Image 1: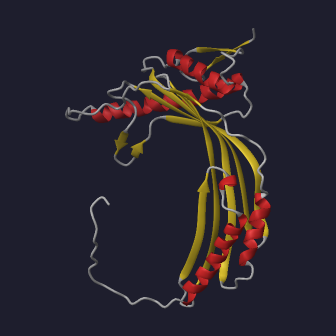
Image 2 (image 1 turned 60 degrees about the vertical axis):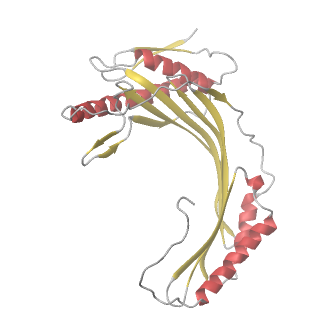
Image 3 (image 1 turned 180 degrees about the vertical axis):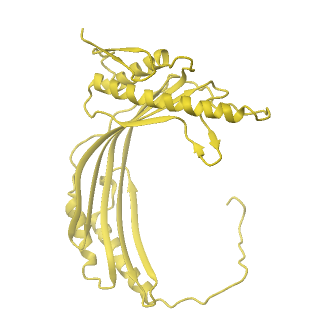
Length: 308
Protein backbone atom coordinates (compact mmCIF):
# COMPACT_ATOMS: atom_id res chain seq x y z
CA UNK A 1 0.00 0.00 0.00
CA UNK A 2 1.52 3.38 -0.96
CA UNK A 3 2.51 5.67 1.88
CA UNK A 4 3.59 9.29 2.06
CA UNK A 5 6.19 10.21 4.64
CA UNK A 6 6.28 13.92 5.56
CA UNK A 7 7.74 16.07 8.31
CA UNK A 8 6.94 19.55 9.64
CA UNK A 9 9.43 22.21 8.64
CA UNK A 10 11.14 24.04 11.46
CA UNK A 11 11.45 22.82 15.02
CA UNK A 12 8.50 20.45 15.02
CA UNK A 13 10.16 17.05 15.10
CA UNK A 14 7.85 14.31 13.94
CA UNK A 15 7.13 12.05 11.01
CA UNK A 16 3.72 11.72 9.46
CA UNK A 17 2.51 8.54 7.83
CA UNK A 18 -0.56 9.10 5.65
CA UNK A 19 -2.31 5.99 4.45
CA UNK A 20 -4.04 6.15 1.09
CA UNK A 21 -6.88 3.91 2.26
CA UNK A 22 -10.08 5.35 3.72
CA UNK A 23 -12.04 4.25 6.80
CA UNK A 24 -15.61 3.01 6.56
CA UNK A 25 -17.34 3.63 3.24
CA UNK A 26 -20.06 5.75 4.85
CA UNK A 27 -17.47 8.38 5.76
CA UNK A 28 -16.58 10.88 3.06
CA UNK A 29 -12.88 11.32 2.24
CA UNK A 30 -13.13 14.82 3.74
CA UNK A 31 -14.49 13.60 7.09
CA UNK A 32 -12.02 10.72 7.08
CA UNK A 33 -9.12 13.13 6.55
CA UNK A 34 -10.39 15.45 9.29
CA UNK A 35 -10.62 12.62 11.84
CA UNK A 36 -7.31 11.03 10.92
CA UNK A 37 -5.32 14.28 10.96
CA UNK A 38 -6.98 15.27 14.23
CA UNK A 39 -5.91 12.00 15.83
CA UNK A 40 -2.36 12.33 14.53
CA UNK A 41 -2.04 15.93 15.67
CA UNK A 42 -3.30 15.17 19.18
CA UNK A 43 -0.81 12.33 19.65
CA UNK A 44 2.23 13.56 17.72
CA UNK A 45 2.20 17.33 17.27
CA UNK A 46 4.65 18.99 19.64
CA UNK A 47 7.79 21.07 19.85
CA UNK A 48 10.56 20.04 22.22
CA UNK A 49 10.23 21.61 25.70
CA UNK A 50 6.83 23.09 24.78
CA UNK A 51 3.37 21.91 25.84
CA UNK A 52 1.45 19.78 23.33
CA UNK A 53 -2.07 20.68 22.22
CA UNK A 54 -4.81 19.63 24.61
CA UNK A 55 -7.61 20.62 22.24
CA UNK A 56 -7.92 20.95 18.43
CA UNK A 57 -10.93 21.69 16.27
CA UNK A 58 -11.45 21.82 12.52
CA UNK A 59 -14.11 23.74 10.58
CA UNK A 60 -14.62 23.27 6.85
CA UNK A 61 -17.12 25.22 4.75
CA UNK A 62 -17.70 23.71 1.32
CA UNK A 63 -19.85 26.25 -0.53
CA UNK A 64 -21.08 26.93 -4.04
CA UNK A 65 -22.25 30.51 -4.57
CA UNK A 66 -24.33 32.20 -7.26
CA UNK A 67 -24.75 35.95 -7.73
CA UNK A 68 -26.40 38.16 -10.34
CA UNK A 69 -26.88 41.92 -10.33
CA UNK A 70 -28.57 44.24 -12.80
CA UNK A 71 -28.98 47.96 -13.31
CA UNK A 72 -31.44 49.72 -15.65
CA UNK A 73 -32.02 46.60 -17.68
CA UNK A 74 -28.37 45.58 -18.04
CA UNK A 75 -26.68 42.71 -16.22
CA UNK A 76 -23.57 43.87 -14.35
CA UNK A 77 -22.70 40.67 -12.47
CA UNK A 78 -23.34 37.13 -13.65
CA UNK A 79 -21.49 34.62 -11.49
CA UNK A 80 -23.39 31.44 -12.27
CA UNK A 81 -21.54 29.15 -9.85
CA UNK A 82 -18.27 29.45 -7.97
CA UNK A 83 -17.15 26.89 -5.43
CA UNK A 84 -14.79 27.36 -2.50
CA UNK A 85 -13.77 25.04 0.32
CA UNK A 86 -12.26 26.86 3.30
CA UNK A 87 -10.63 25.38 6.37
CA UNK A 88 -10.09 26.92 9.79
CA UNK A 89 -8.17 25.38 12.67
CA UNK A 90 -8.17 26.18 16.36
CA UNK A 91 -5.47 24.81 18.62
CA UNK A 92 -5.29 25.31 22.39
CA UNK A 93 -2.34 24.59 24.63
CA UNK A 94 -2.39 24.54 28.43
CA UNK A 95 -5.39 22.94 30.11
CA UNK A 96 -9.07 23.52 30.69
CA UNK A 97 -8.39 25.84 33.62
CA UNK A 98 -5.80 28.04 31.90
CA UNK A 99 -4.98 27.91 28.21
CA UNK A 100 -3.88 30.04 25.25
CA UNK A 101 -7.32 31.56 24.61
CA UNK A 102 -9.08 34.70 25.89
CA UNK A 103 -6.00 36.89 26.13
CA UNK A 104 -6.12 40.70 26.25
CA UNK A 105 -3.04 42.92 26.39
CA UNK A 106 -2.73 46.69 26.44
CA UNK A 107 -2.12 48.06 22.96
CA UNK A 108 -2.79 44.72 21.30
CA UNK A 109 -6.50 44.37 21.85
CA UNK A 110 -8.12 40.97 22.06
CA UNK A 111 -5.80 38.13 21.13
CA UNK A 112 -7.97 35.63 19.33
CA UNK A 113 -7.36 31.97 19.93
CA UNK A 114 -4.48 30.73 17.81
CA UNK A 115 -6.11 29.94 14.52
CA UNK A 116 -4.94 28.93 11.10
CA UNK A 117 -7.04 29.20 7.99
CA UNK A 118 -6.51 28.03 4.45
CA UNK A 119 -8.22 27.11 1.20
CA UNK A 120 -8.74 23.36 1.08
CA UNK A 121 -8.70 21.22 -2.09
CA UNK A 122 -12.04 20.99 -3.87
CA UNK A 123 -11.41 17.41 -4.94
CA UNK A 124 -12.09 14.73 -2.33
CA UNK A 125 -8.43 13.73 -2.46
CA UNK A 126 -7.69 12.23 0.96
CA UNK A 127 -3.93 12.82 0.88
CA UNK A 128 -4.22 16.39 -0.44
CA UNK A 129 -6.73 17.29 2.27
CA UNK A 130 -4.52 15.72 4.96
CA UNK A 131 -1.56 17.78 3.78
CA UNK A 132 -3.51 21.06 3.94
CA UNK A 133 -4.80 20.17 7.41
CA UNK A 134 -1.27 19.33 8.50
CA UNK A 135 0.09 22.72 7.39
CA UNK A 136 -2.80 24.72 8.91
CA UNK A 137 -2.61 22.81 12.20
CA UNK A 138 1.13 23.38 12.45
CA UNK A 139 0.63 27.14 11.95
CA UNK A 140 -2.18 27.30 14.53
CA UNK A 141 -0.14 25.30 17.07
CA UNK A 142 2.87 27.62 16.82
CA UNK A 143 0.63 30.67 17.23
CA UNK A 144 -1.01 29.08 20.26
CA UNK A 145 2.40 28.52 21.86
CA UNK A 146 3.34 32.17 21.32
CA UNK A 147 0.05 33.41 22.75
CA UNK A 148 0.27 31.03 25.71
CA UNK A 149 3.76 32.27 26.61
CA UNK A 150 2.61 35.91 26.58
CA UNK A 151 -0.49 35.07 28.58
CA UNK A 152 1.48 33.22 31.27
CA UNK A 153 3.91 36.13 31.56
CA UNK A 154 1.05 38.62 31.86
CA UNK A 155 -0.70 36.61 34.58
CA UNK A 156 2.44 35.80 36.53
CA UNK A 157 2.36 38.97 38.64
CA UNK A 158 -1.40 39.16 39.08
CA UNK A 159 -3.01 38.44 42.40
CA UNK A 160 -4.74 35.08 42.56
CA UNK A 161 -8.50 35.29 42.14
CA UNK A 162 -11.34 32.83 41.64
CA UNK A 163 -10.96 32.80 37.90
CA UNK A 164 -13.40 30.95 35.66
CA UNK A 165 -11.93 28.09 33.64
CA UNK A 166 -10.91 28.97 30.10
CA UNK A 167 -12.74 25.97 28.66
CA UNK A 168 -15.27 23.32 29.66
CA UNK A 169 -15.82 19.67 28.85
CA UNK A 170 -19.03 18.80 27.05
CA UNK A 171 -20.70 15.56 26.06
CA UNK A 172 -19.77 14.73 22.44
CA UNK A 173 -22.52 14.57 19.83
CA UNK A 174 -22.56 13.34 16.25
CA UNK A 175 -24.82 15.01 13.69
CA UNK A 176 -24.58 14.01 10.03
CA UNK A 177 -27.16 15.48 7.62
CA UNK A 178 -27.60 15.21 3.89
CA UNK A 179 -26.06 17.77 1.56
CA UNK A 180 -28.57 20.07 -0.19
CA UNK A 181 -29.68 19.15 -3.68
CA UNK A 182 -27.71 20.72 -6.52
CA UNK A 183 -30.31 20.68 -9.29
CA UNK A 184 -30.66 23.52 -11.78
CA UNK A 185 -32.95 26.37 -10.63
CA UNK A 186 -36.37 26.49 -12.21
CA UNK A 187 -36.09 30.26 -12.76
CA UNK A 188 -33.48 32.12 -14.80
CA UNK A 189 -32.55 34.62 -12.11
CA UNK A 190 -30.14 36.51 -14.36
CA UNK A 191 -33.00 37.28 -16.71
CA UNK A 192 -35.32 38.11 -13.82
CA UNK A 193 -32.83 40.58 -12.32
CA UNK A 194 -32.50 42.23 -15.74
CA UNK A 195 -36.26 42.55 -16.16
CA UNK A 196 -36.96 43.98 -12.70
CA UNK A 197 -34.14 46.53 -12.96
CA UNK A 198 -35.87 48.02 -16.04
CA UNK A 199 -38.50 49.51 -13.69
CA UNK A 200 -36.04 52.25 -12.68
CA UNK A 201 -35.15 53.25 -16.23
CA UNK A 202 -38.09 55.66 -16.59
CA UNK A 203 -37.75 57.12 -13.06
CA UNK A 204 -35.87 60.37 -13.71
CA UNK A 205 -35.73 61.23 -10.00
CA UNK A 206 -33.80 58.02 -9.18
CA UNK A 207 -30.05 58.66 -9.31
CA UNK A 208 -28.89 55.07 -8.92
CA UNK A 209 -30.49 51.67 -8.52
CA UNK A 210 -29.61 47.99 -8.39
CA UNK A 211 -31.33 44.63 -8.29
CA UNK A 212 -29.38 41.61 -7.11
CA UNK A 213 -29.86 37.99 -6.16
CA UNK A 214 -27.37 35.74 -4.36
CA UNK A 215 -27.35 32.19 -3.13
CA UNK A 216 -24.91 29.95 -1.30
CA UNK A 217 -25.34 26.22 -0.92
CA UNK A 218 -23.11 23.58 0.57
CA UNK A 219 -21.98 21.89 3.76
CA UNK A 220 -20.35 22.86 7.06
CA UNK A 221 -18.12 20.26 8.72
CA UNK A 222 -16.94 20.48 12.33
CA UNK A 223 -14.84 17.97 14.27
CA UNK A 224 -12.74 18.33 17.38
CA UNK A 225 -10.61 16.36 19.77
CA UNK A 226 -13.36 15.78 22.33
CA UNK A 227 -15.32 13.65 19.89
CA UNK A 228 -17.79 16.00 18.22
CA UNK A 229 -18.60 15.37 14.55
CA UNK A 230 -21.05 17.65 12.75
CA UNK A 231 -21.91 17.82 9.05
CA UNK A 232 -24.82 20.16 8.35
CA UNK A 233 -26.16 21.73 5.14
CA UNK A 234 -25.89 25.45 4.42
CA UNK A 235 -28.61 27.02 2.28
CA UNK A 236 -29.43 30.71 2.10
CA UNK A 237 -30.50 33.09 -0.62
CA UNK A 238 -31.10 36.84 -0.70
CA UNK A 239 -32.87 39.24 -3.04
CA UNK A 240 -32.26 42.99 -2.84
CA UNK A 241 -33.78 45.96 -4.66
CA UNK A 242 -32.29 49.36 -3.79
CA UNK A 243 -32.39 52.89 -5.16
CA UNK A 244 -31.07 56.35 -4.27
CA UNK A 245 -32.39 59.83 -4.94
CA UNK A 246 -31.78 63.38 -3.76
CA UNK A 247 -34.28 65.95 -2.52
CA UNK A 248 -34.25 69.51 -3.79
CA UNK A 249 -32.57 70.65 -0.56
CA UNK A 250 -29.70 68.21 -1.15
CA UNK A 251 -30.78 65.54 1.34
CA UNK A 252 -29.81 62.01 0.26
CA UNK A 253 -32.67 59.53 0.11
CA UNK A 254 -32.49 55.76 -0.05
CA UNK A 255 -35.08 53.01 -0.21
CA UNK A 256 -34.61 49.26 -0.35
CA UNK A 257 -36.40 45.94 -0.25
CA UNK A 258 -34.50 42.96 1.18
CA UNK A 259 -35.55 39.35 1.38
CA UNK A 260 -33.78 36.29 2.77
CA UNK A 261 -34.88 32.69 2.28
CA UNK A 262 -33.25 29.26 2.22
CA UNK A 263 -33.56 28.98 -1.56
CA UNK A 264 -34.52 31.27 -4.44
CA UNK A 265 -37.48 29.00 -5.10
CA UNK A 266 -38.98 30.36 -1.89
CA UNK A 267 -38.97 33.97 -3.13
CA UNK A 268 -42.34 35.61 -3.89
CA UNK A 269 -43.81 35.44 -7.42
CA UNK A 270 -42.30 37.72 -10.03
CA UNK A 271 -45.36 40.03 -9.99
CA UNK A 272 -44.76 40.73 -6.29
CA UNK A 273 -41.09 41.50 -6.88
CA UNK A 274 -42.02 43.95 -9.64
CA UNK A 275 -44.50 45.56 -7.24
CA UNK A 276 -41.76 46.11 -4.65
CA UNK A 277 -39.55 47.78 -7.28
CA UNK A 278 -42.38 50.13 -8.32
CA UNK A 279 -43.13 50.88 -4.67
CA UNK A 280 -39.54 52.02 -4.18
CA UNK A 281 -39.82 54.37 -7.15
CA UNK A 282 -43.02 55.87 -5.73
CA UNK A 283 -41.64 56.14 -2.21
CA UNK A 284 -38.60 58.10 -3.35
CA UNK A 285 -40.82 60.42 -5.38
CA UNK A 286 -42.94 61.16 -2.31
CA UNK A 287 -39.93 61.65 -0.02
CA UNK A 288 -38.31 64.11 -2.45
CA UNK A 289 -41.34 66.41 -2.12
CA UNK A 290 -42.10 65.82 1.57
CA UNK A 291 -41.91 68.99 3.71
CA UNK A 292 -39.16 69.25 6.31
CA UNK A 293 -40.20 68.80 9.90
CA UNK A 294 -39.69 71.56 12.43
CA UNK A 295 -36.48 71.51 14.45
CA UNK A 296 -36.95 70.51 18.08
CA UNK A 297 -34.64 70.64 21.04
CA UNK A 298 -35.95 69.33 24.34
CA UNK A 299 -36.82 66.25 26.38
CA UNK A 300 -38.25 63.07 24.88
CA UNK A 301 -40.49 60.81 26.94
CA UNK A 302 -40.85 57.09 26.33
CA UNK A 303 -43.68 54.92 27.59
CA UNK A 304 -43.64 51.17 27.83
CA UNK A 305 -42.65 48.18 29.92
CA UNK A 306 -39.08 47.18 30.60
CA UNK A 307 -38.12 44.11 28.62
CA UNK A 308 -41.13 44.42 26.31
